[in-house]
Length: 116
Image (cartoon, rainbow, N blue to C red; front, side, top):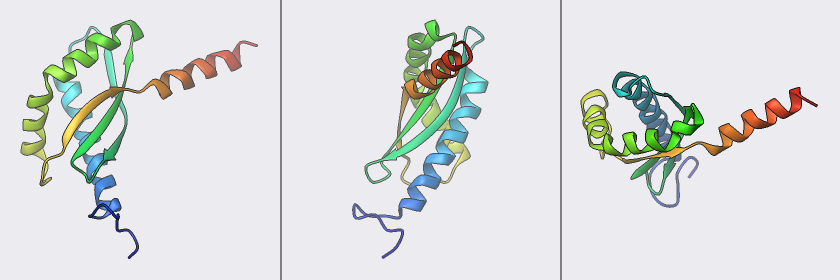
């Protein structure tokens, strides 16, 4: 059956749910985060059977990355409440906030390629 994951459920549905979580994470972060750093949602990936979603963020300045991740971990329950209020996801996935190191590596490569 096309579009069906062997673990159960539609892979297209899980990807769409992950995109929705990423969008709502961006809205939540822009509303809740302070002005000490800029936290940007770069992507999200569904894990397992849609029970978890990894939300990847980039942080500027990079020195504030650990503090930003700690903030997101502390606010995880508030974000779950935000998802309950603004989406119709059922069951609600567990969200893990992770630093997007791939984005930082891409930026470093861009900088290196401009300065030979």
